[in-house]
Length: 343
Figure: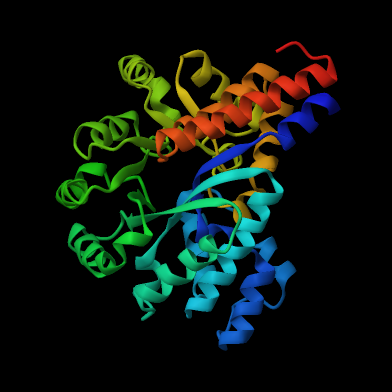
């Protein structure tokens, strides 16, 4: 367990979150409130009954209940309320910048207008003191043709999102399945990221880099199984958006003591810490930092490095990035001195 002084520093440090699925921030209480507002029947009798159903054994069992929860999102105001609730939690955890994933196909398949999805999320971001940007994700268990259709539907709102991602069921849906649509997104000047190397093999990380030309790898924890790939990720400083509580909840690692985050850092990788689907996986940013610092041999220098990595990996103008990094360094200089902890 980390000492109370270090815990206070880690919880208070400036953070960037780069791997958050906004639909995965939908807490059971809000699910029930939106279900009542929209007249959507739920297969759960109470908030407690729904929360008790969060017993996932793998990615697919999680996705099944995740999509059920998203069924209550029908109107622009629903997406606003969900995003506003997440941003309040992020602000409380000292998140200064966040890049939010959203899955329009989860909603358009139910007849929800993509404009309502994007406008609701974007409006909440505009109303928050937290710096926030949006990344539109394609569902990889669907076809590339459907991804193209979603992209075309979203383009009238191009000014409201900065990038494209790839999520949902990884196994059996390799990155190269979306080669053409990612090429089109690259032509449009969008930032590119993809989930790879979570349940899928290290080869998925390689093809996401080589074929899709992504700039960041979401998860990527299985890269250590391939020494050559690990060396490349370190050499090119390709960021990994690691989600510790998610990894243990979905049994990528049986328990937090088994997590390879320290080995990733020791290999020189640009590792960031994120919450993924916090309503389902046991916590937001500070909960993830608490978990890794309690279970792994991490100290103050690791905390500063992880805080810096989040901003280094962010899709921000360099001047804004530098300002955030200066804030991080000033914070650690001040608090290390105040607590008498050597940096």
